[in-house]
Image 1: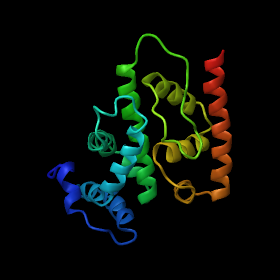
Image 2: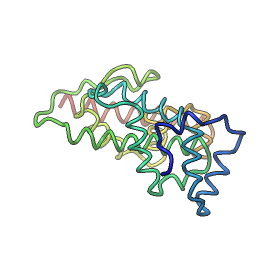
Image 3: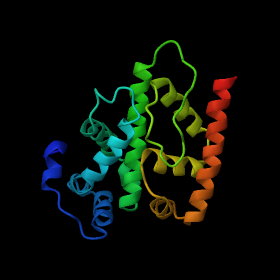
Image 4: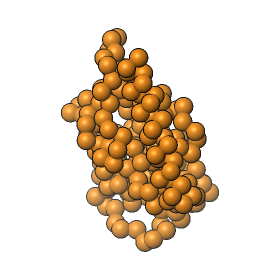
Length: 199
């Protein structure tokens, strides 16, 4: 990458509607510069997603949003982002990549002993309370057991910070379906996480 992520966002300008979508098509067609331009256009959004995720992390003081964006970019640059259809879908994939990075961090930092689960709320304010590396790993395992679309809704909302309308557009469903999937997924996750904690 010719320009570092740290400096790219300073040159970013507001994109016309659909510019990210156009660049995603260009990247799929082999334009080697398109992905760098996409990152320029959505850098602030990526940092906001990273900051939300790091607010919950026990090692938030040692990891900065820009670092998480950089690590997620490495995953996206390896081809995952080429599957995105538009800006919201790209941000959802970026949120998933950040989740993967944080899970990798949690695995490295996880202590030998697991303490009882006191997982933060999966309600509307999902970013309020920090969670431990063990909780991140338990949550990750539980999310992986959800039905595919419910898993995508959780990833988009919990990790990507997308709103219901953005999730609906990304997944090609209506907002009512997103709400229903979120309620079902949240209920299942509570049972999986708190049930396991109280056993």
